[in-house]
Image 1 (cartoon, rainbow, N blue to C red):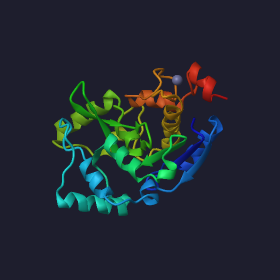
Image 2 (cartoon, rainbow, N blue to C red):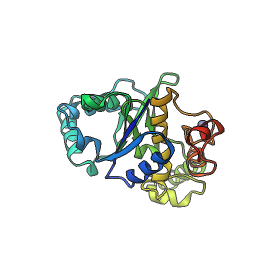
Image 3 (tube, protein in one colour):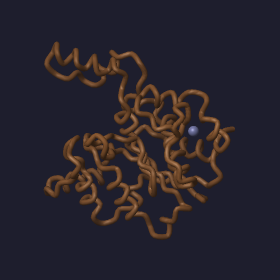
Image 4 (cartoon, helix red, strand yellow):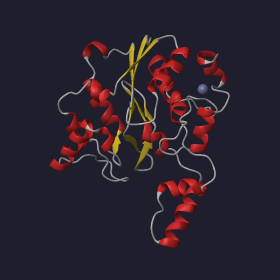
Length: 254
Ligand SMILES: [Zn+2]
């Protein structure tokens, strides 16, 4: 039984950890506390090396990591100045292991759920198709909820990719993302989207739900515990009524 949740802020993003915590607290039977950035709270030795080893090298290559000195220096800088990093994809399970090792022993019991809002993109390897997939969340202890993952992991509407291709054909380059995002109809979340905090709530609840019940995401696409593969589904699951499927409304609904 989870009796306490610690939620860690991601101050370089627009995600409002306190608002997520308030929402969560109203729905579960456990205390919820908000803490500062995880990597600020627990800075164990060797973290830059963990991050360097967890770097995805290529979308189709299972092996991760590089021990090049420059990479470790980059990771050291990224830990010190998180606002400066970006564009790297990490193996979510390896990052989870690193953060688990960083948790103080007195707090690593599963009664105390740790949920880390992270300002990095994470992925998991798809055994079935031999490639990396970006993820919004990797459940477990601690659970990682990636804020960039919210924008990057689900597939965007088809019009988005069409527009991108058309632009590339006409001008020979990739259009700036802002341009693309303004030109495409259909619904998707863009970086620093004002709906970010709201859209993250279900993933944070899923982190709690997993430790509490052993169940991962919900199969029902109208439920906040659904792990959407498309932006339109993510918006429907997280931002539209009803909040939950019948089964999960009984647990977390009003
Ligand atoms: Zn459900």
